[in-house]
Picture 1 (cartoon, rainbow, N blue to C red):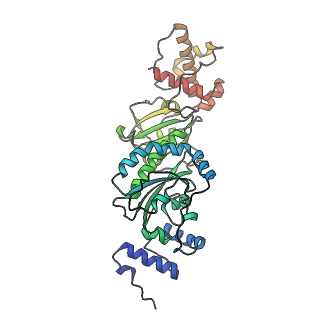
Picture 2: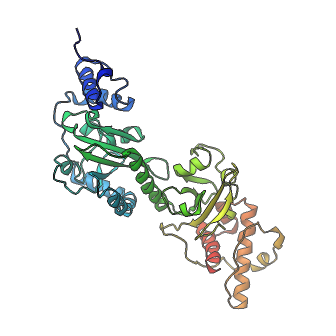
Picture 3: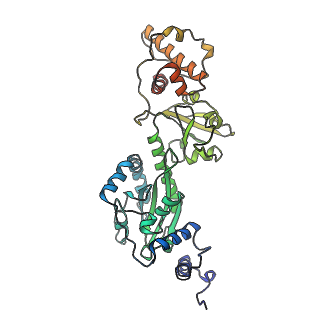
Length: 403
């Protein structure tokens, strides 16, 4: 006969979790309604893998070579983390939380641990190279995010091992320009439960790091920033879209998807033209201001503010002025009828010697006309002109910068 009390009679969530653990690990009774489905499934996996939850979890680093490999492979991610650390530390300075960054496998590559007097597990668990995956330390928030790709909060007794029950953690994924998990941001507190919505805060900072990573990974992309208010263009709430040299949308962040109606632009999607979602072809998007903002009416009816920047192949912001287009046959370019130019607001060229000025303007006319004929497809225009895609980017950017 079962003499354990009913879960409904227990007032404390901690008590309900403790009873659910006992019933599951001793009697196989599912903890339905007490823990999330993700935590329950993790308990089941860990029971098969680790056996007894009363054994002590071992927070051990991976090998030195694997640690170095993780740091080397994730340099852009780590740099994005480092750029965001000052704000993270400022936000968490008066809390009892530590922020941690893992790679896509759960190996720790960044931490803000300060070694508070009441912490015993945290200084051990936050060493660079420690494996926080489910296979290594059981049910934890970063381990679950690595496995499922979804944000999660794991508090107290929801951890698999009894020795980790003093921990409270919330984690969110960070994705790259291919939509794959690049890393995980985790907020953890030892012994002291969260006094705020840690999942929301983790998601906010994970989004900020992801935005930095997306822009850093964009080479030869036109990066569009947009939001309903222009003062949000430099915030973590900015919508970001990367348009590739083929004139198609290459990637987008979660905010952009929300502003565009929740549509996810999968790699297999046939029509990834910016005209469909942003209402403008590549050439006109490239004419958006680099600083400040310009109004943009989206096809879904939403009015936003937007700016654009072209990314160099080396990841730098903006492109430097490059060599001119081949001038062996300047006459055809000069003969182009101005009426055939696309509706792109290209700033006037800087004052130069008359002959050189005519050549550069001819180059620009030819580029603009060819882009229009190719529907904004930079790759096709470059092939038709016999030049590199980067040169087209540089010419358009140099003209705009000179204005």
